[in-house]
Amino acid sequence: MVGYTLGGGLGPLGRRYGYAADLVTRIEIVTADGALRQVTRDRHPDLFWALRGGKGNFGIVTRLRFGLVPVRRLYGGGLRFPGEQAGRVLDAWRWWTATAPEEMTSSVALLRLPDAPDVPELLRGRLTAHVRIAFTGGAEEGERLVRPLRASGTALADTVAEMPYAEVADIHQDPTHPLPYHERNIVLRELSADALDTLLRVAGAGSSCGDLMVELRHLGGALLRPAEVPNAVGARDGAYTLATLSPPGTPDAVLRAMEPWGTGRRYLNFLAGEDTAGAAEECFDPGTVARLARVKAEFDPGNVFRLNHNIAPRA
Ligand SMILES: Cc1cc2nc3c(=O)[nH]c(=O)nc-3n(C[C@H](O)[C@H](O)[C@H](O)COP(=O)(O)OP(=O)(O)OC[C@H]3O[C@@H](n4cnc5c(N)ncnc54)[C@H](O)[C@@H]3O)c2cc1C
Image 1 (cartoon, helix red, strand yellow):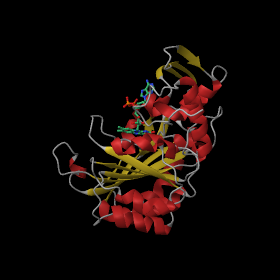
Image 2 (cartoon, protein in one colour):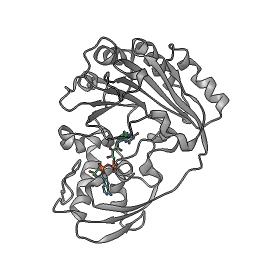
Image 3 (tube, helix red, strand yellow):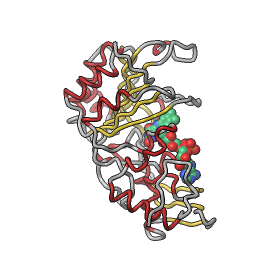
Image 4 (tube, rainbow, N blue to C red):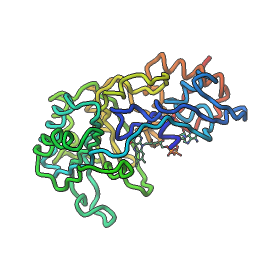
């Protein structure tokens, strides 16, 4: 909860409600000098700005308070297509995201899972395209909106339906047990036809892609707007995130090929692994990096909190 929220927090309803960090109203933290501080928009406002987006650089957070939003149900789930249909599915999704309302948050993951007994049979040893849907509007409207995606291929599984919010984790079906992986990402400014052709060449069926997952998330909506109390969350100017999840040592071929469509930024929470340790400053514009470094110099001048995606203190 804490790392996720301090790094932004790109959740399944992000386009409707923004980043998790946008909803934080109070933070209790132990700073490098050992002081326990209560941080709000009025108390240590610079630290309040920096903590929401700048992640673990400023101390140990011991309590978070959120402003909640009233969501009891949604229309959501996943459509799984065979990897050979990934081109059609991604092309349909690319067009569809251009007009999707803010109440609709979606993503697509190309999953290439090993032929291993703990992998669900449907996914074992094959490439699949998983379209994830979370719509906070009515089920009938949701069904109408999702129709073109359903028609884009022959789904192996379709779990998109009315659901209680409490089951929201079923949409992505992330593993709940620890796995050794590296995660890297770039933020894309667009997903043009050329960009999609390139992505399919390096990550689609028949490619030599070594990543377990190549994932696109649709940004926009509330994810583009500053929080009500502005914060340091950095990936606000892009149209999609493109992330790869890989066994350590896998070449960074997919993101390199896609760089021409990148904004030059990365999303902090989708960085994991030693080779991403120096990438924190690539997650923010230069003005935000300079301001984070000044707040760091005030609250952690000796860089006590450095075993993280580090922002070094600078006066
Ligand atoms: C299966 C899976 C799915 C994910 N899905 C998403 C997603 O949908 N959206 C998204 O945004 N991210 C997602 N992430 C990434 C996740 O947000 C990051 O891995 C995050 O760093 C996890 O934080 P943690 O506190 O659980 O982990 P930890 O490994 O405990 O902490 C990671 C870092 O967070 C900071 N941190 C943690 N606790 C504190 C604290 N108490 N005080 C100060 N700093 C702290 C520190 O910098 C620490 O090094 C996912 C990760 C996994 C494994």
